Length: 134
Image 1 (spheres, rainbow, N blue to C red):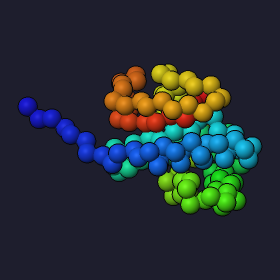
Image 2 (cartoon, rainbow, N blue to C red):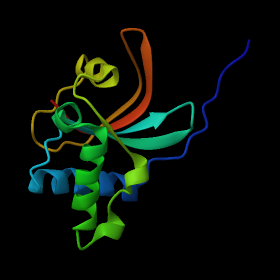
Image 3 (cartoon, rainbow, N blue to C red):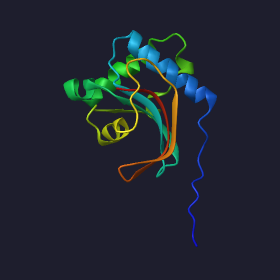
Image 4 (tube, helix red, strand yellow):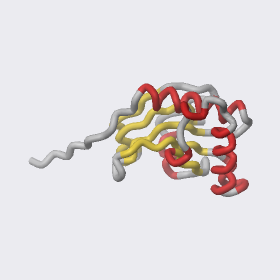
């Protein structure tokens, strides 16, 4: 019998705190984030901070990234937030967002929900830490 073992980098308290901080910063700067969560990407064995925003559909991905970069840069404590290279901005209609909404809804507040090793509609979600999913 062959078993598959996924070796992954743990989601540290620092990353969890940085995700909370960035989600708050986005809110404070009127950047609409309908979803914000850490997601473990099995293929690259890395954590990505996923933000779903209507800004992607409205102004395009490049413009949305510029706005997020400006928010991060304008934060006096910028070194304690997430780097832009670790962020993926997606449309609220993105397939991953739609999939996760089948299992979790947080409302507008910032939550802290660990979602590990769950199967949704036949798709395995290895690991995620959800702040918001509306």
